Length: 185
Image (tube, rainbow, N blue to C red; front, top):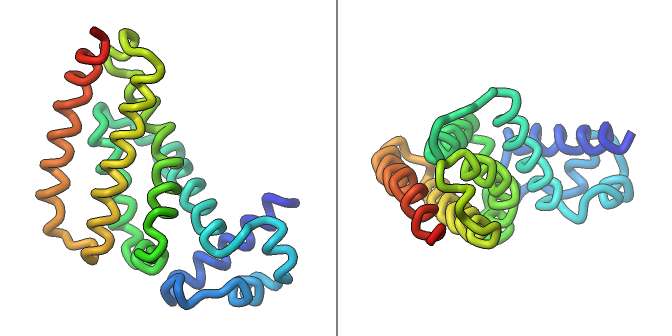
């Protein structure tokens, strides 16, 4: 029952985000839309942003699993995430509030770190690196990807960003094996 209630609350927020920015949506609006009381909302979520980040984590995980995305490199994972954002442009722009960028970055990192960790494990030199170093690389790549993503969103998600993203992916792909090799020594 709890998952059904959370899902209903989430669907209401997603519906409202298609119409207006998150800064114009209150807990009351969400509760009215899904016909639940505020107490039920607060039983499941601390605030609108807690709900939003719960949705983001679920969406990113579902996207990678249900779409069977299996790119051969780190940039392929990020490219698919950017593609997802482009496909849901209006929703992403409405969901983003730069005043809470730190919370967005945290949610993004929490959602992408497991994906990055799994991808790192596929590299040849992965087994030569300590778990501590793997965690440092995962954190580094998650932070840099978050910075790139939010800079893009804050600039209005222009198509012209593709060139910058391609250069970032080149840096990413070329650096993973080199860093794993360096850390193994």
